[in-house]
Amino acid sequence: MSKIFDLGLTKSASEYETENLSVKGKIPNWLNGTLFRNGPGTFKLEHENYRHWFDGLAMLHKFVIANGKVSYSNKFLECAAYHEAIATGRVRYSEYATDPTRSRLGKIFAVFDQRITDSAKVNLAKIAGKYLALGETSKQLEFDPKTMDTLGIFNYEKKYKQHITTVHPQFDFKEKTVYQLVTRFGRVSHYRFVRIFESGRTEVVGEIPVSHPSYMHSFGLSPNYLILTEFPLLVQPLALLFQIKPFIENFKWKPKRGTVFHIMERNSGKVIAKIKTDPFFAFHLINAYEKGDELIVDINGYPDAEVINAFYLDRMRDENSEIPFGDLRRYKINLKTKRISHEILFDECLELSNFDYQRFNMKANYQFVYGVTINKNKRQGFYNQLVKFDLKNGKTKTWFEEGSYPGEPIFVGKPDRSKEDDGVLMSVILDETKERSYLLILDAESLQEIARAEVPQAILFGYHGAFWEEML
Image (tube, rainbow, N blue to C red; front, top):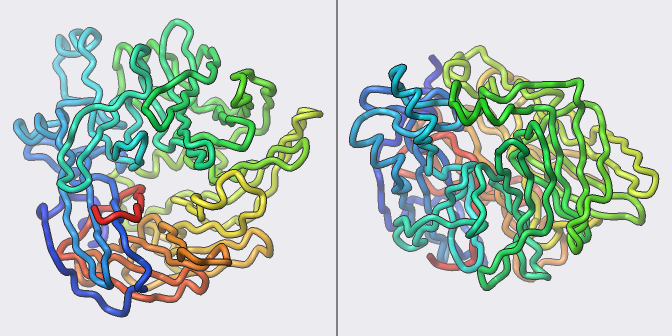
């Protein structure tokens, strides 16, 4: 097995609290704030192991950047799934692709006592003044940003039980609201769009009934519309109720169903279009905006859902394995004629995409998308390169260093900037040679290194993060 997977897919060495990391280079004076990253802290327990990259017990990582210095701390997200797993050495809650080991009688009782994980390991957000760790189940966890202690469960709806949700809420900074998509399973299941106000008050924008719900990791937001992409990765809700298989293994790829775009008005909650296109799959919708009668949606797309299977740990640990390529594609939906078309903007591997969300979400004039990719000469293994794609001229810039494996790049813009890419990219890199990680800071325009801060341990392969201009 390759050493990189032994480092990135096992367990974190320890929980640290380090005041000053060793910094190589010079961090810009204007870059002050806190970078959080979420992801698995261990795939290994005393008696059992998790099976998939999207399993594992959640761990928060915090980098506080101030006056050219960086402090680092990390902590397991305290929750029922964590405490019981550590106490017993076994998987005790149903995860993405790993279920608890049960006897035949235990499987029967599980129908009446479903133990769904509260290990919110995927993303982070600040909603209604609360700092949240986000997962795909209904249990989002509020945490104290200073101590990273868990404060309790956050519900998108107080009186209505949802079963799953996306991990990418959408923010309208002008309106000062947050939108989220939740799904409730039943005889007739429902997709429900929820709006959350600054005060914490929530309201349902609208809902869509469905017999076989789709697996969706994100959704789209434009100035006037909510965009739901219903991929043909579908589930019979009763299969989830009886827990015959782990969560994601109940979903089946049905390409003949195609992918359906549901377009809902943000103000009325009315679905104004339901448009079918060729089958494809995606984790991440990047951005959406409107041009006259056209709705434009940029997406990290795949021809099918095989990428989910590629993230089972036994396949990832095969040093000859190759991750399916995701591309950057643009869908154009004419809301007047109800016609849809798409083009591939970038056909190289692209994932964990990001852009200047704060300034350019829902805007047509955004130009740059950042993400992780795979170097053409190092095709086997894991994501090993950062990429910047120029939407206007099709050009790309990359950062690559032998033996280094980057996480999601997070863009932070210079406060007085006049250009979209005047800022930095921050990515947590796993260094195979030194067997530890470092925080990499790149110039977002050139993708040249500005600085790096060495972390005292290897940080496992994670997913998403967030930067707040606060010293937390």
